[in-house]
Image (cartoon, rainbow, N blue to C red; front, side, top):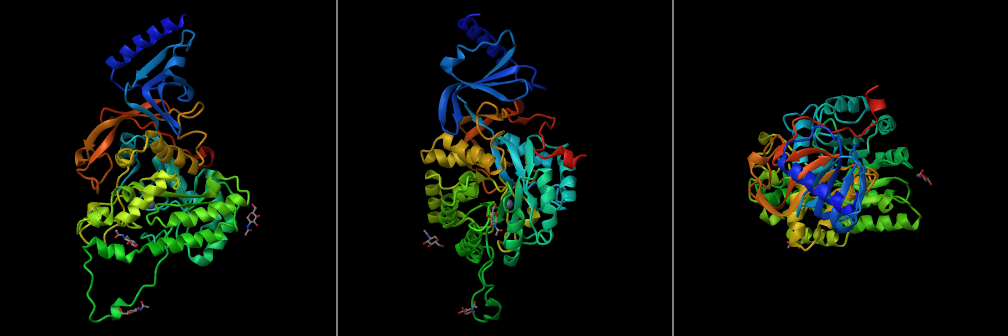
Length: 497
Ligand SMILES: *[C@@H]1O[C@H](CO)[C@@H](O)[C@H](O)[C@H]1NC(C)=O
Ligand SMILES: *[C@@H]1O[C@H](CO)[C@@H](O)[C@H](O)[C@H]1NC(C)=O
Ligand SMILES: *[C@@H]1O[C@H](CO)[C@@H](O)[C@H](O)[C@H]1NC(C)=O
Ligand SMILES: [Zn+2]
C-alpha cells in the first residue's frame, strides 16, 4: 500500500468518525488522534498520536511522518480535533471527595463526572472530610470499596498521618497510597487531628527512605492573642474578608515551611507543601531543595516540592465582597502583590504543580460569616480553563499548562511512567481543548454536587471539548459517558483480596 493510499483511507475513516457522534463502548481498534496543536510538556506540533487497543500511546507523529504510517490492514479509527489542542489529561493531585461519610458535600460519582468534564483524567483523593478518614488500612478498604463502582476517571489515594496511626502507614503504603497528608494546625475535622511539632521526628523516621510523599498543610498557629480581655477595642466584622485574612497572616505559612525545612536535611523522604498561598514559602523550600541536591539527592526536584491552587492565581483579597464565603479557603487568598509574586514564580518554574484543592461543603456551612464558614473552595471542573484564562493573558503557552497541571502532579504521585504527558508507553489520557473558545460558569453546567463557586458567572477562556481516559471517551459535547469506566490506582491484591 502506498503512503498516499493510507492517507486517503485515513481521510475516509475521518469522515465516518465525524458523522458518528456517539460514545464508543470499548476500544476495539487502534485510534489515531489528530490535531494542529499536539501539546507536550516541552512544546507543540501539528500531528497525531497513535493509541493501541489497550489504550496506551504507541506513537507520536508529525503531519509529515504520519504519511509514512503503515497499519498492515488493521482498522484505525481516526479522531481529528482540527484546531483543538490535543493535551495530556489533567492530573489533579488534591481533591476532597468526602465519600463515604459526608456525601452531602460530595461523592465519587459527582466529583469524577465533574473532573471528566474538566479534562481531568486522574484525581487523587484527600484522606479527610470523608468518614472514616483514610488513616488506617481498614478505612482505605472501606473507601476503595465504595469508590471502585463509582469512578468515571482514574482515582488514586492519599493516606492520612495523624497522631497515633504510625503503625498503619506501612500497611497503607502496601495498599498503594501515593503518600500521606498531615496537618500542622487544626484541620477543622475532629477525626483528623493535626500532628504536633514533637511528633514530627517520629513520623519522619518511620517514612525515612521510602518512596511515598509526605504532604503537609503548612500553617502553624500563631499566639491566640488576648482580645477577650480587651474591653474598649473594636470587634472586627466577621462578615468582612479582611477580618479572616488578618487572622491568618503569611507568617503562619512561613513559620510552618521553615519548620518542615528544618527536617529536610535530616531525612530522606519527599516533602510536599500543599496549597501554598503565601509566596514567601517558595524561597524557603528552594533553599532546602538546594541543600538536598548538593547532598546528592536523586529524587524528583530534590524531593522538596510545592503546589499552589487556581484560586490563589485567579483572585486577590481586595476583590472579595463582604459575606461571600464561597471565597473562603485555608490558607486564605491574599493580596494582589502576593498573587503577582506567585505568577512570577510560575513563569520562572519555581513552583512544581498546580492543583484544585476542591473542598466543597453544603451551602448551609457557608453563610455570610467568614470566621465561622467552612473553609474550602469547590472548583474541580474548571481548573484547566481557570489556569489557561490567566496563563494566556500572561503570554504563557499550552505547554506550560501541561507542565503544571499534568506532568508536575503525575510526578508528585509517582505516576510519571503512566500519566501526565503525551509520550509512547503512557496511558492515552487525552483531552481535546479549544483554547480560543470561552464560556460562562453557571450552576447548570456544574457536575459536582453543591453548585457553589467563587467563579460563578465568570467568563473563562478555553473549553474542554472531549476527554479520553486510557483511550476511552468519557466526556463530549457537555455530556459524561453514562457508565463509570475509571480505575482505582491502588494495589487491588491488598485491598480486595
Ligand atoms: C494583648 O493586647 C494588648 C492590647 O491590644 C497588646 O498590646 C498585646 O500585645 C497583647 N498581648 C499578646 C500576648 O497578644
Ligand atoms: C534517614 O535515612 C538516611 C538513609 O536513607 C540516613 O542516612 C539518615 O541518617 C536517616 N535519618 C535519620 C534521622 O535516621
Ligand atoms: C500585601 O501584603 C503584604 C504582607 O501581608 C504587605 O507587605 C504588602 O504591602 C501588601 N500589598 C498590598 C498591595 O496591599
Ligand atoms: Zn485540601
